[in-house]
Length: 453
Image (tube, rainbow, N blue to C red; front, side):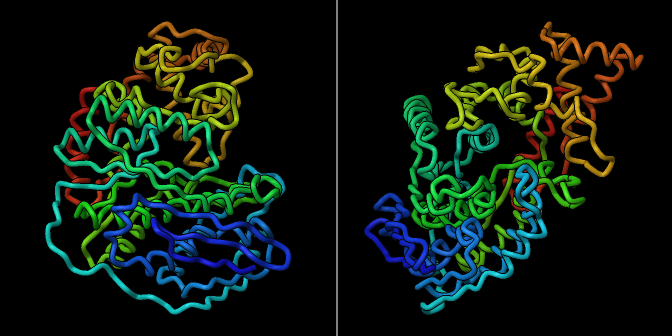
């Protein structure tokens, strides 16, 4: 299996050839003026050509892969993070086992036929510490980062990466980008990543897998560098709560972070990689890592409702619904969080109740979790608080009745329990990062959360 990369007018193309597998050239495209101005094109292509296709031979169960590019400078970082994330990737797939995937990943033979490129961005002036680049997906996390940055007086350059495998999601996000331009005079750049098709199990006609997910974080990091250079913006803002990386007892008794790529450790790797590539001129930061899911929803929709209205957070390709799939934990939690905040979930795009009996499996609150599974146990705490608040707001449904019966049988004082949970949930869950913007955001969130208790 050979991947051939070639520079193009607005980025680069990548084709897959070999005796068993072959694919037409896919392109990775930047806006023309952004790519033209970027001085380290070959070095960036070396990294992106590899990291964009990191899971492909694993998905295809292919023993060897070669590239016509040089050995990536950051290959050890990519492999470390992928290796750490494997238990999480195989968790929901019954046919995959972590040990087997670890073995396959390390057994793949990788060859690089091009020249290694250690080029870094040249030192230039004009960098503005109040200017940042933000990968924007229109999910709650990146929307809160956007709202926070604007509240703090930063100039934000939003960039949406179209991965070409989600046409309905793309169409909806294009509409949202047009609305945002008109409402806030905020232009959202588009990067097209057709190469993601070579990591999609459906496109590759292989059994279902989640092995395509890890490398996306590195793609988002590397793809932001040309925008950082063009706008002299020295920070890339990632958006994920660190509580996603709480320890989980995975199947096969793997005790490891639920999502390693959302961890503080991974963000440190992102920041170091950005600094190395840019000669110390660009770094990565994360504003909302100090928050948890419920707090993010509350701050976004209560403090920044003008941005909350843009939220799209679901598997849009898997459903006939416009905004929510109504069949996953993200939808379940958003529904109960809206009810807890006194916001009508149906006004936020829901067309079915997530409190019917058949939705029970989507709530951690109604499951039984091992004492070492910190992730699901904390999810259950957040959901318990949301159910208590939603109950006060009159939200109804079979699962609300089930919760009320459990509360009654436990003999717990609901008001006292709610006060205790508010203190646990509506607080900073971690210390802010070292970047100035992270500390500014944490100070703002601390004030907001104090008001919410």
